[in-house]
Amino acid sequence: FSIQLATMSQSEVADLERLLRQAAELVNPDELYVYGVKINGQQHYRAAFGQFPTSDAAAKAIDDLPATLRSRRPYQRSVEAMRAQNLQ
Image (cartoon, rainbow, N blue to C red; front, side, top):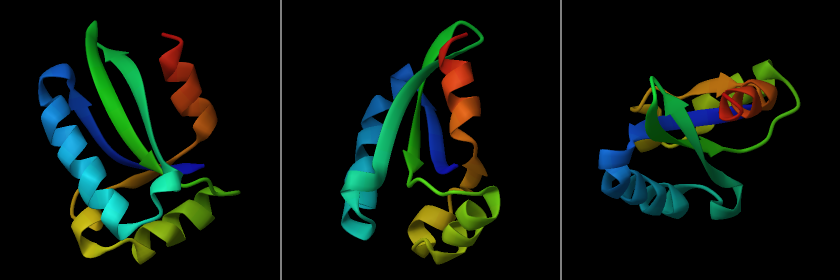
Protein backbone atom coordinates (compact mmCIF):
# COMPACT_ATOMS: atom_id res chain seq x y z
CA PHE A 1 0.00 0.00 0.00
CA SER A 2 0.99 3.59 -0.56
CA ILE A 3 -0.47 7.02 0.11
CA GLN A 4 -1.79 8.83 -2.92
CA LEU A 5 -1.05 12.51 -2.40
CA ALA A 6 -2.48 14.03 -5.57
CA THR A 7 -3.60 13.47 -9.14
CA MET A 8 -2.92 16.21 -11.66
CA SER A 9 -3.48 16.60 -15.37
CA GLN A 10 -0.81 17.20 -17.97
CA SER A 11 -1.60 20.94 -17.83
CA GLU A 12 -0.91 20.94 -14.06
CA VAL A 13 2.63 19.54 -14.24
CA ALA A 14 4.09 22.76 -12.81
CA ASP A 15 1.75 22.40 -9.80
CA LEU A 16 2.84 18.79 -9.40
CA GLU A 17 6.49 19.82 -9.43
CA ARG A 18 5.78 22.42 -6.72
CA LEU A 19 3.98 19.81 -4.64
CA LEU A 20 6.90 17.41 -4.97
CA ARG A 21 9.45 20.07 -4.00
CA GLN A 22 7.35 20.97 -0.96
CA ALA A 23 6.80 17.32 -0.02
CA ALA A 24 10.52 16.58 -0.34
CA GLU A 25 11.16 19.14 2.41
CA LEU A 26 8.57 17.54 4.70
CA VAL A 27 9.03 13.80 4.20
CA ASN A 28 11.77 11.49 3.00
CA PRO A 29 12.13 12.31 -0.72
CA ASP A 30 13.29 8.75 -1.39
CA GLU A 31 9.74 7.66 -0.57
CA LEU A 32 8.02 9.94 -3.11
CA TYR A 33 6.82 8.38 -6.35
CA VAL A 34 5.23 9.74 -9.52
CA TYR A 35 3.45 7.66 -12.09
CA GLY A 36 1.44 8.47 -15.19
CA VAL A 37 -2.10 7.30 -15.86
CA LYS A 38 -4.64 7.89 -18.57
CA ILE A 39 -7.99 9.12 -17.30
CA ASN A 40 -10.71 9.45 -19.93
CA GLY A 41 -8.00 9.38 -22.57
CA GLN A 42 -6.09 12.28 -21.01
CA GLN A 43 -2.62 12.05 -19.47
CA HIS A 44 -2.49 12.57 -15.70
CA TYR A 45 0.19 12.12 -13.08
CA ARG A 46 -0.14 10.85 -9.55
CA ALA A 47 2.13 11.56 -6.64
CA ALA A 48 2.37 8.86 -3.99
CA PHE A 49 4.30 8.48 -0.76
CA GLY A 50 5.69 5.47 1.05
CA GLN A 51 5.26 1.74 1.02
CA PHE A 52 3.22 0.11 3.77
CA PRO A 53 2.42 -3.54 4.49
CA THR A 54 -1.31 -2.97 5.06
CA SER A 55 -4.07 -0.51 4.32
CA ASP A 56 -4.33 0.23 8.04
CA ALA A 57 -0.61 1.06 8.23
CA ALA A 58 -0.97 3.46 5.31
CA ALA A 59 -4.05 5.06 6.91
CA LYS A 60 -2.13 5.56 10.15
CA ALA A 61 0.75 7.11 8.20
CA ILE A 62 -1.69 9.62 6.68
CA ASP A 63 -2.45 10.85 10.21
CA ASP A 64 1.29 11.38 10.70
CA LEU A 65 1.81 13.42 7.52
CA PRO A 66 2.49 17.14 7.89
CA ALA A 67 -0.69 19.23 7.78
CA THR A 68 0.28 20.71 4.43
CA LEU A 69 0.15 17.29 2.79
CA ARG A 70 -2.94 16.15 4.73
CA SER A 71 -4.81 19.21 3.42
CA ARG A 72 -4.84 17.61 -0.04
CA ARG A 73 -6.94 14.75 1.37
CA PRO A 74 -4.52 11.91 0.65
CA TYR A 75 -5.73 8.35 0.89
CA GLN A 76 -4.25 4.88 1.03
CA ARG A 77 -4.19 2.85 -2.13
CA SER A 78 -2.98 -0.60 -3.01
CA VAL A 79 0.09 -0.73 -5.21
CA GLU A 80 -1.64 -3.42 -7.26
CA ALA A 81 -4.51 -1.04 -8.04
CA MET A 82 -2.05 1.64 -9.10
CA ARG A 83 -0.20 -0.79 -11.35
CA ALA A 84 -3.45 -2.07 -12.85
CA GLN A 85 -4.54 1.43 -13.76
CA ASN A 86 -1.19 2.03 -15.47
CA LEU A 87 -1.97 -0.86 -17.82
CA GLN A 88 -5.25 0.64 -19.01
